[in-house]
Length: 401
Image 1 (cartoon, rainbow, N blue to C red):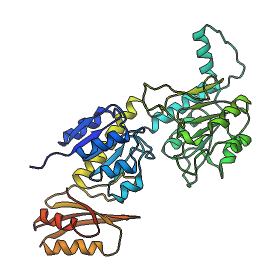
Image 2: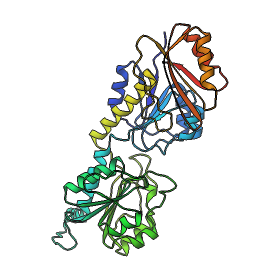
Image 3: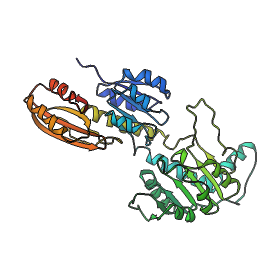
Image 4: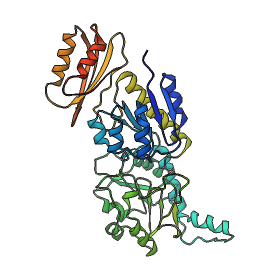
């Protein structure tokens, strides 16, 4: 009897993921903390699947110790904490949750815009200290102001819709041409967004292109008195230049949810040069930290796991060729990951023919270094066929589904 797949979920992933996976007979173990590289290397040989959040770093060394893994999942949007290239070369698809926390992040940004415009952070702190700061000076409505969105993806476009409902004019810039929602207006470049916006909200991934994309040059052109909001990645804003912009009153305030360096857990102290500055909202990377978002993320990635493990579907993988077949009916299914070189499909089909099996359905997709094929067959010795295909010189991994 085949033992059930063992799945490790770390960083206090929502328990709905565990319950969904256990329904299909998987053996799921939970950890509440983010394991170190050393701990992961020791743990992973016991498991077939790994689920993480944003803190756990899946380095090349970790993958080297876990080349047997069937798949991995980031229970969040970002996947920069995973060495995606190494995972791909080893034939390990990595899934994420690009949609599940969109609304939560967008709502936080809306709240922060209003808080910054009304200086609620400082006035709340003052009231707790006994200071009565009742004044209209510096307090503004958001209605009629211009919101500039940098990165018009899932979150940016959702924010666009919410902001228009509040009466803001929305402009945006994205390096990829995007269809505007509502009355949002695309801008040709980042400089236009900075020059025209009363609020600038950043929603870009962490790449070499976005590292310190808001720095001295950008603060030199930003609209005087604007507000900056960053709920994307901590490396996107040059913090030292942001501090100068605040102290020199180039901008009227900021809300920062992500930082270049963040505590590994809630037990560690947080330090930032932004602490203590006026009209600055600092939140501990909670853009997607709502009960609804974490539940939805748990469901989304768990569903990706089960579709891959049970049916071979790689829909939603960020580093893998996409193949999406319906569940098997009467046939038997196997998957194969191989080096993306000419002639591999012919070798696989020749092996199928040699075993006297008949192909019922087959789908192949390739991406850079690898190819991925899902095949349904009838007849023949499927167990031996899978073994023989796995021995082909260019096969990386082969598994009976």
